Length: 347
Ligand SMILES: Cc1cc2nc3c(=O)[nH]c(=O)nc-3n(C[C@H](O)[C@H](O)[C@H](O)COP(=O)(O)OP(=O)(O)OC[C@H]3O[C@@H](n4cnc5c(N)ncnc54)[C@H](O)[C@@H]3O)c2cc1C
Image (tube, rainbow, N blue to C red; front, side, top):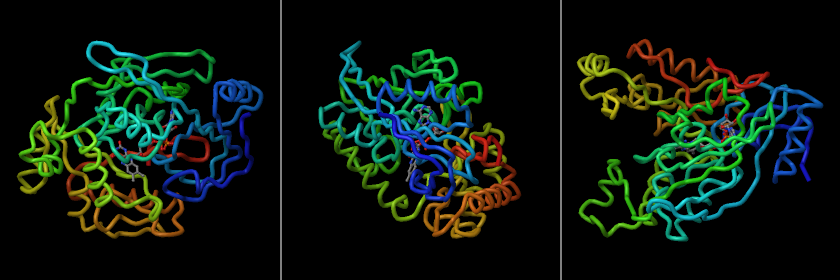
């Protein structure tokens, strides 16, 4: 039966751990709960936010609405197609558990995305990426329901509009699309992605002798070393996206800052390292209230204790303004910002 809570403190529902109250929280565990929610939202309309693990959401203030937590479970091998396995998982499956489950069955393909918090249903939203792989490259299709019309939908990867930390699910016109399951296409032949510098170094000279499980273990170990554990220090991973600029802009900046890391992309643009820029601005350790730029990973903003959404807003604005003054670029925020009435598109 659908679980329903009223006047809920959301600090334990997100990895950032900032306090914010929601009028109502619903936890959906199966299709019957989903149907129950769709009826309830007709009867009692409120601003709504669909939530998975809450690892990419920043509540800036109280939320005058309903949080709908998708906790549906289930994972299965659907079959094989063109030398690949099709594996389907429900939206509420914990992402990292799903990746490990695949590996335990000998199904590689997702190992570069090891140890990322959150649920399966959220990975298409910002096209989760890490260590040289974006999840969109392994998605066959995404299924869901339109919460406004109650219609089921199914979109192929090509229709999902995947890009760097983005997809059609981030667009305001897709706000009614709720993801209920994701089907992954996992290559049968191990096709390891080891071109990311940390992985190249780790596996140099081993050639064909590396297994997907070893890549998973390496990524998990490197991440644990580099990133703050949200259970110890609240955070949402990277707070800013790496800017994608034209080659001309990259050249102009490189003339002024010769050691600026630049990564040419297949589409001709150049990816710049936002963390490097923040560090160069002397912002490591900078604080606004309880929010702090992490001392080692400048791209991560942490809850140093007692932080509120407003502290993160103030700190993120300060970082953006300082970087814009020094480098002439406005960094884009990566996590989803939520205000009183729902998702906020601008800082
Ligand atoms: C320590 C740490 C490390 C991280 N590392 C990475 C990384 O390497 N790469 C990376 O890309 N991200 C990373 N993240 C960010 C985050 O973990 C991912 O974006 C993750 O996929 C979010 O999942 P979630 O279930 O917590 O989503 P939530 O935070 O609950 O939701 C995120 C967004 O997705 C929407 N959403 C969630 N579920 C659904 C659904 N079923 N249907 C429709 N919309 C939905 C929400 O409304 C919200 O807009 C990291 C975060 C942390 C804390």
